[in-house]
Amino acid sequence: MDYTDTETFGTILDRTATREKGNCFEDFSEGDRIEHAPGLTLSNYANELWASQTLNHDPMYWRTDAARAAGFEEPPVHPDYLLAAVMGPTVEDLSEKGGYFLGRTNVRYHDQSVTPGTELRVSSTVESTATSSSRPEYGIVTWETEGKDAETGDPLVSYERTNMIPRREPVATDGGESAAADGGDADSGEGDADDTPPSEFITPDGDRFGDFAAALDAAADRDAAVAYRHERGRTMDDVMVATLPLMTLNTAKQHHNVDVMADSPSGDIVAYGDVTRSVALGHARSDEATYRELGCDDERFHTFVTPGDTVYGFTRVVDAEDTHDHAGTVTFEHIAFNQHDEPVYSGTRRALIQQ
Ligand SMILES: C/C(=C\C(=O)O)C(=O)SCCNC(=O)CCNC(=O)[C@H](O)C(C)(C)COP(=O)(O)OP(=O)(O)OC[C@H]1O[C@@H](n2cnc3c(N)ncnc32)[C@H](O)[C@@H]1OP(=O)(O)O
Image (cartoon, rainbow, N blue to C red; front, top):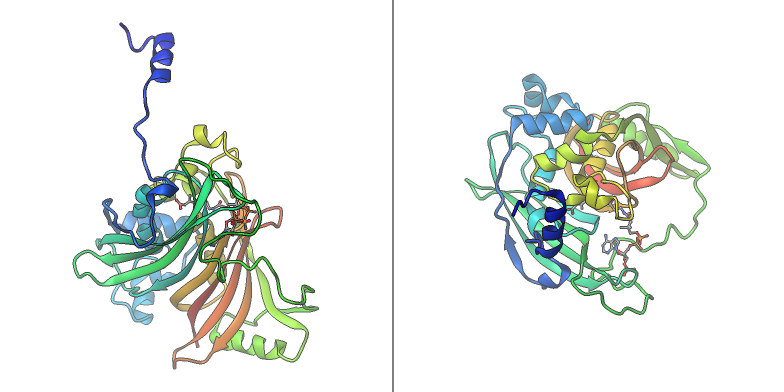
């Protein structure tokens, strides 16, 4: 029999089982620890591709003199690439089955002097599992993930991530209150007590810590916020949507299987949340003199970004604290939005900004 005869082959395909990849919601129990087998060695090529394509062009990641001026011996890998390189190898075990990256919090960079050639080891612990009241075919899982330097065992990045994960069997839900286990501060679904925007928005005069602090001082005692848009936008193309996640071993079909995704709610492949976020942060960093990334919290992905969408950035300055001689700590809220002005990502970020 000729297996490659189209008609015969179609019949055979209909009768054969698929050897599945990934895990369903039922495979995760609170406290489970998973050592992720896929290894990844940070590479100069991937680092440059990630940082260049997401418009993260800060000289300290490209030029030796700028890196040294910022206290590094040589240009380190970009923190967004480092974060994605830690998350990518987790996908096969945690989220390849499908469902969506809902959010992440407690992102902490433990060492930012990491250079290309560093081999990573990544592990995750299931922090919580919960029923989705709105989507009985999914559950909601939160994991805590840590990426370490394989040679020294030193922690490099850690975070808590929450995804919708398909169930093998849908459950009956009351369709009522959210059952998100960690519920907490991820999203109260409510804005400020007073939802009226401030009457005035102040833009800092420059990109230094003092400019952010002065703008916040100017806004205090007034019905004003320090908030501004960034000019650049990045249209999502194949490199952004499929190449960047695959380069970090992120096997989520959402980003590279158009055939499967045609039948999903987005109708198309969707941009990896870390790519969308990195573009928004790249826009923001182009308007600030960043010294170090400290961490991100309350990151949410509000709606799909599909090929052809353009990602813009908006920043609100929340706080500025004079913490170091050479830099101060600034807390930002960043919102990525698309060409229809719809928020697609939001999160708070703390960074040291040069004095
Ligand atoms: C796959 C991948 C990486 C990977 O491999 O991993 C990716 O990169 S993929 C690309 C990035 N991603 C997206 O493209 C998603 C964009 N987004 C949306 O398209 C919509 O957001 C939605 C359709 C997913 C939901 O839409 P929505 O139904 O209107 O949203 P919500 O009602 O807010 O959330 C529904 C339920 O998730 C609970 N929930 C939400 N957020 C959190 C959180 N942070 N912690 C704990 N629970 C949370 C909520 O509590 C509710 O729970 P219930 O079901 O119990 O009500």
